[in-house]
Length: 113
Length: 117
Image (cartoon, rainbow over all chains, first blue to last red):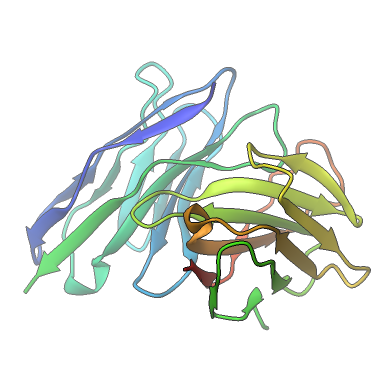
């Protein structure tokens, strides 16, 4: 079945460091891919998305490219801030499914000043 | 513009009891999905409602049931609570119009934290 695997956390970085959070997926067809962020005590917020191969999603300095050949959607940011500290979830929605999002287990990012 | 509103924010129940969680979708949205997020895990899809009917269901037992009202708001009911039902329950709304492959964005609420003791 469809699944998403994320790198285990926590990831601890100093402010202004480069961030990569790895995400790989298993799915048939051409799923849509998402990154969500969850701040403490809050729900999920959509960070970025990509709906077809080679698409690059970007928002607030974060980027991720839909790589069909490696079934990956790694999240990157060139210079993290303390305010980026949160839990990041990679998710997919299959091409044959209208509603169900399948999430990875989440990666906690802690940015220190 | 109000986003997704969930109530209550926190709830403590005893094993064997029943619970009802509520969700008001974002204005203009017609579809509501429910997710269960156990501590330290990613959310898991419970079910989705459109036009007052359950359109999709995840791998959850029949103890989990739901309802959608004509104003698009929704309830999640869990019967015979188990300790393992302790989790954050998230509601997500979207606008699909029933289109089979609609790709509209989801808006999540802040969730209801359910603790079963």
